[in-house]
Image (cartoon, rainbow, N blue to C red):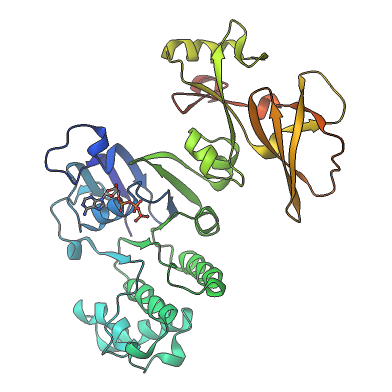
Length: 370
Ligand SMILES: Nc1ncnc2c1ncn2[C@@H]1O[C@H](COP(=O)(O)OP(=O)(O)OP(=O)(O)O)[C@@H](O)[C@H]1O
């Protein structure tokens, strides 16, 4: 098991990259700590597979260092890095039995026979592959084959990390949940560093203790599911995490804070200074639908808005509102009644976030927080 550190990493598939747009991974540094259960979450094409292949050594990065436990491994072959990688589609030897498939990495490493048998049986039991252990892999279902692929990574005691690249794509929907639980259980049992690539936020948050959200070739936030929800560091995290995503409103700067339409939102002095220091005019307010406050009567710091739609989703409702030129979503409890066509909307200060050039501007300075 190893700590995996990516230092000033960048990768372009183009031989002569001309600008940031030519990079699949844009200059970034990141550490996957020893023994963590991590998800790498992001939309299609953001660079997830590229990053995994750089870690496992299938791809040499254009720039930067890949460090395992503070040792640079850029020049090491995939085999010598001791990384197990489980791909979207199962990789098994069809003509071998399940037992031999699982035993394969151990035989290659010259492990004694008795140890191989014990280890294969242990992993087969965890993955519930015992009934098919003596069968040829050829006759297995897609999810059994994928379990064999995972098992091949898990049998080895010497792996630095296991990388899963959307491993449940071919799995039956009912079995997905079960396998995800299984992986979590395996992580708890063996404490191996695991990085699980997915574009599904539910999959990421049920598996991982910490999620790295990737967007446009960069990790824009690394945090617990709760941190990503409560304090998105980037507008993309606000938009991508949550259902529906964060409301994002373009605003302009005023003396007191910011404004959109004829609505003034005051900000504290620290925030105003930090916004001014950037010199940027790309400023947004963000608030999650869960934190939008709706009242029937006007109150301090509320604004009248029109109800456009109420969608009942069983355990909660999504209300679509028109506030000035803005369309907003609010998520409310199923038993909260909505009547008439006007409501009053408020943004609790604690949950109202300010973004400059898509990144969060903190309410407090770093020094004030520590
Ligand atoms: N072999 C390649 N040659 C050229 N460009 C590539 C190659 N592989 C990936 N890319 C490009 O690099 C970018 C990142 O791709 P990557 O496959 O790493 O993303 P991803 O997040 O894993 O997406 P997906 O979930 O669709 O696999 C994309 O723009 C993709 O088109």
